[in-house]
Length: 204
Image 1: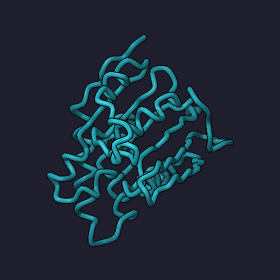
Image 2: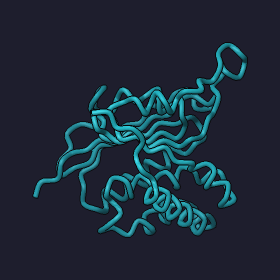
Image 3: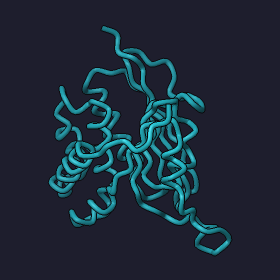
C-alpha cells in the first residue's frame, strides 16, 4: 500500500534545538523505510531569530518544500513562532505548540507588547491545535534544553508514528552518551503529554 507524502514544518528560535529535533525525526523516518527530503532556513539564530526546517516523508518524495496552506504538521517551539507560520498549515492540519513565550527584540526594547491572545487566534484557525507545556515539563526533568526532545516525543505520538519503530534507539543515537538517559526520559514525557492532550477548537 502506497504511503501518502506528508510535510512537517518545525519552527523555533535560535538555541531551542530545532536542528536536533529535525535530525531525530529524519533518522527515525529513514529507519522506518520512508523516503525523506528536508531543508533548513536559518534566521538570525544567534540573536534569537527564527530557525525553520521543513521535512517531507513518504514512499517517494520529489521535493523538500511546499508552500502556504500545504503543510500537514506545524511543530512550533514558541508561541509567536506558531502564529508566524500557522498560515502554512493545510485545513485540518495539526499544530503542536509549546506554550513557551520568548519575547523578540522589539518586545524587549519596548517597541511593541507581546500579544496576549496568541492561543485565541490559533484556536480560531481550521486546524487541530495542541498546545502543551513542554518547557514546564523540561524544568521538572531538571534541564530546559530537552524541550525539543519532549516536543518530538509528543509529535511522534500525535501523528501515529510511535508504533513499529524503537524510537529510543533513534534518540540515543542523536545525543551525547552522557545525556542519553535524560533525553530518553524527555522523549517518553513528550509521548505522555500527547497521550493526555486534546485538540483545542477545530473550525470546519
